[in-house]
Length: 163
Image 1 (cartoon, helix red, strand yellow):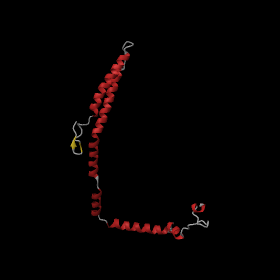
Image 2 (cartoon, rainbow, N blue to C red):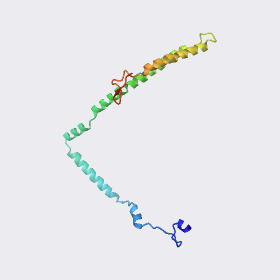
Image 3 (cartoon, helix red, strand yellow):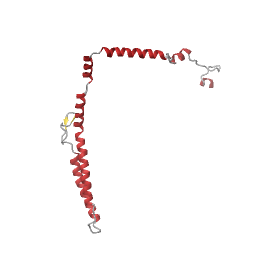
Image 4 (cartoon, rainbow, N blue to C red):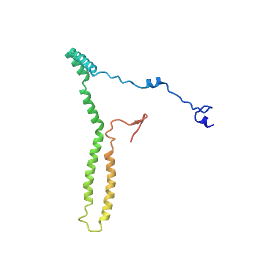
């Protein structure tokens, strides 16, 4: 019973599976090592062919090639499109920056307690901060509203979305 578990035959001799030597030879990749002067000859030949091709080209061929590869107008159009796409975001960031500058100026006025009598600072600070956040939420809504910048009507699956 133990012999059957160990891949052995009934007489106790273990089977050995040999791999064919042809499979082992086929798996090895042979690297062909050519002498260096072969590479030099091939390189010189390619450079000669390239020189002949460039030498045969006329000025009209060069102008046609330049016309095909000229992307000057496309670059100008692409840069204009990029500016058009990102302008609402640039305006929103600029307005946000102005908002933060204005709020820091107003908060410095609210938090200046040098002229008030002692004890009134707590209520003054509480009321000032509450008023600040009330106004800030309204102003931030106006700053981040980009609906005026979008020239197209938003649609999802053909249904129009309106504010």
